[in-house]
Image (cartoon, rainbow, N blue to C red; front, side, top):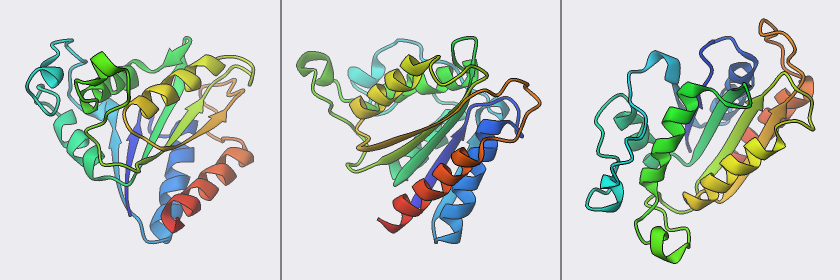
Length: 191
């Protein structure tokens, strides 16, 4: 099994990163091959709204550090997305990356409204969100992003929300979040 992990935090020791790394360790211990990208270390542009991916290109027309990420996305069996919530949404680094996932959706989606992905069928995803706010806050964020993953062809879509990260220096996610990450890794690898 191939796992791709996208880290959206600008801090490599952030709680979202700690949870994703635990998923990766568990997946690797069970035979998975894991590739990880830290978006903050990369040089890439946000979606340009050029619609080249809908009018002639099968991939995003931009050529930058995300080009390899999207090649790996196509090959991966499971994708882990990890980001903290900053000021009511995912980090800017993550949003700029995630907008370009639109290139994985075929052009007929625009006219039929039916998810039609360029990605191979059966992709699994785990979306890890960490936030300072409580569980009742920002629920629409994970619902919105999971909806876009479904449109992009992901079928097994899971979420871990680690809430009440009151201090940005708090790198210790809740034990439940770590347990959920380990369980998801076991499920994905052993399915």
